[in-house]
Image (cartoon, rainbow, N blue to C red; front, side, top):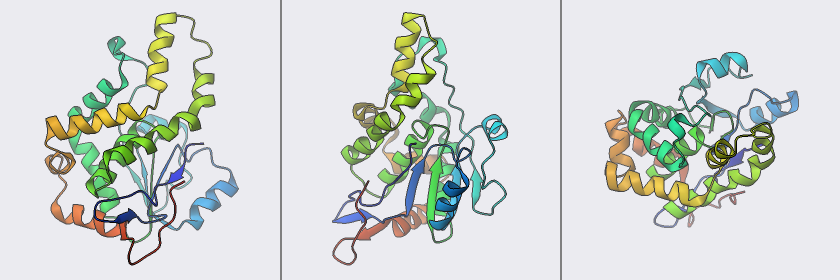
Length: 236
């Protein structure tokens, strides 16, 4: 539903994200047997599940017993607390509250053995979107490319979210939920601006959460390929 390879995204100094090195997705618990086999063919070395423990118990991952599985729970309630209308405000709040948890998720990618890293949550938009943005920014992907990729989720999740809103009758609540279900490029762009202006940038933010320079270097080594030396897979 909302899975894609981040390979081909540009980085600084003519680099690109390596094809099949970093994959984002919605929950894997609803994969068919063929879907599970397709994931295995990617030869992932790490699957990072950002869902809460309750979500994992309700819909277990088919990879939960594997060594490559890593559970880093991030709470991201779907109900709008205190009628907080703007999605970007919720993103900023989560980043402020959980620097250690976000750094833990990024560290799980940095410390993974060679192979593909898969990051997912429930719908693959909010928690996954933030963790992927942190990883991509840490390896030099520009803000606009990160924001454009984030916005791809809008089309991928349109029918899913429309069905989830079908029974909401309160007009004000419906408008709030539509905002929470959105995936606009400007939302991610504003989030990245917040990280730069208020947190000193992504790398200082991650260091504050516990990430060390060795792990930042490991991310760049595993994810970035230089275009003059290697061909890259187009971003789809």
